Length: 150
Image (cartoon, rainbow, N blue to C red; front, side):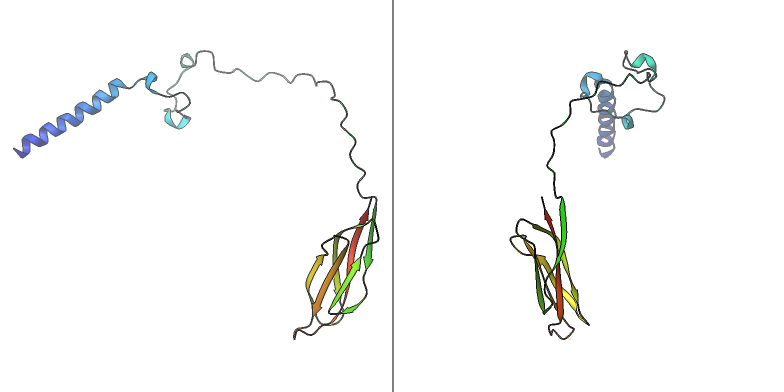
């Protein structure tokens, strides 16, 4: 009985596989679903490509006419100045003049110490720095700000 079941099962699997190969054709394949990886190398000929095979690339055509001129941009910053703040114990602030904007900055520490804070103020009209030594004691520091004006 077990042998009979095994033979019948094998026959059904073989029949299903052969039947599936005979039933699937080009109408069952979705457009764009096949890639080069799905096609066997050297299996296609020019007859398989109904006019879609491209010939050699043609020569380059002449350059087209120039387009219209673009809109004039803003002048941007025409005046860039670096300003320094006073030397302070632990902190210093350098300010731009009226009409100028802060676009960068930094600071200089006197002696042994390091900057632990260097940033523009909220209005972007100055730059502040803070510094201390290894023990957390304030050290002399001077702020610098890069200011631009139109």
